Length: 240
Image 1 (cartoon, helix red, strand yellow):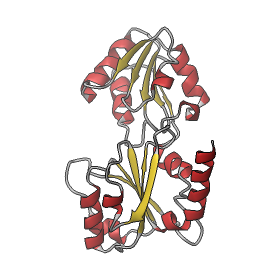
Image 2 (cartoon, rainbow, N blue to C red; image 1 turned 90 degrees about the vertical axis):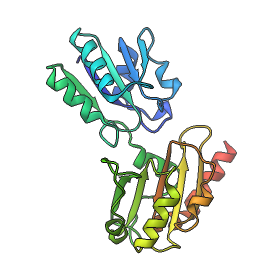
Image 3 (cartoon, one colour; image 1 turned 120 degrees about the vertical axis):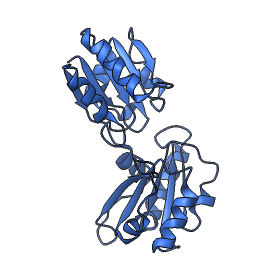
Image 4 (spheres, rainbow, N blue to C red; image 1 turned 90 degrees about the horizontal axis):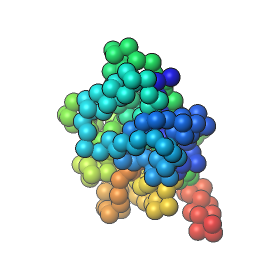
């Protein structure tokens, strides 16, 4: 292995895979995202640590290729899973085009870990048997297809939607999703300053005001059906 594209999980260093931790501890070059916690970055003892902040995607690709060509042990550490809204495949394409060996290490994805930690099942028998994952903005910068999303049954999980939450909720309602459909915003979960706020599609933008990114939005009846489980999770957290 020359370059490893590694998922760092949802934030808590204890939720990374064994393989991810092994690679971080033994790398020579660590290129990490802003959302990766310092506790995990600090495991790269003796490595040159390079923050991705301020670099374009093309510059990150060039950095990986540069060090990979020199045979260095490089870890590109990305929040969540590198192939779920993480642009990890773009980095793999750059490495493959340059003829550089690479390894992909999946991470515990934010879209499964964060709701689970908040006590919200994304699917549950008799409530939701379908799951749709999206970002708050389309990849090409255009707005979302709200008619399609409103007609899609089951749970919606929205990445990077906090800043546009009022716009997203209003347009989902206008397209046909019910104003009283349960919704939740989960901020920084698995980290010490995490928060979960629950409302309806009609109220969630106001309820979530003041929360910080990274946040995940969950829309669907699973939010209401899990109220007793969320209460137990919150009680356990207060007792800890």
